[in-house]
Structure formats: structure tokens, C-alpha cells
Length: 125
Image (tube, rainbow, N blue to C red; front, side, top):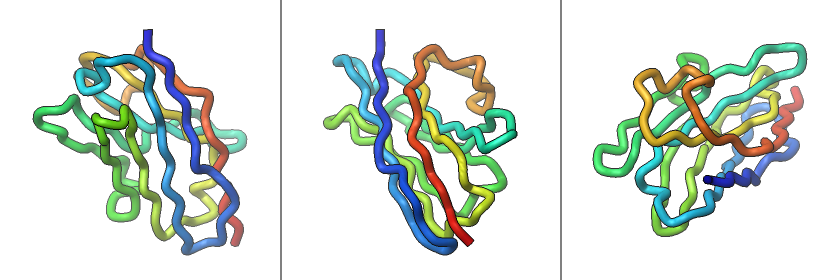
């Protein structure tokens, strides 16, 4: 069982930055692939970014955030980060992290086993 707790959300003006953190319980964090998803008001959940298990640490991004967002992980701290720059009002959403041991399509939310409660990000224009 893995428990995930996100933090770092808040209110920011367009063009600003935020860094989200997701802390995982357990001693095998490095063996999990991690993803970030978001759900905006009136929208379906969508993929944001993912990072593979440690070893290769490949990263994947949605086209809408490529070049603006960066996902990274610190296995010593059981934490995955999402650095978000050049934020826009359309980035407003609840951001959730997710974990899974093995996955083929990182962008599919139903492939993940564990989810956090989410953190609200609001970008004002």
C-alpha cells in the first residue's frame, strides 16, 4: 500500500510559477513510476506528466505543458515534484499524483494503482 500526499498548490498570476510536491509512504518509492494528472472545473481528468521508475527516469509530458512543466523525483525523500512555469489560466485545476509499479501507457489514468487527494492550483489572468 502506498499513500500519496500532495502539496504546493495555491493562487498565482498568469506567467507565474509553482512547484508541487508529492510525498509517498513506504520504502520502495524508487520502484514506482509516478504521474501527475489534473482535473479542471467542468473537465475530465487529464494527463500532465510522468516519470519512470528509477534507473532510467524517463519523463513524459502532455503537449499542453511541454516546455513549461518539469517532473522530477528525489528517491531519498520519497518525493516527486512538478515544477510549473509560465502558468496560464487554463492550467487551473486540482492536481493529483499517482503511482504504479509497472505501466505501459503513462498517460492512461486507469493504469495507476495509487492516488493522492490532490492540491488546488488557481491561475488568475
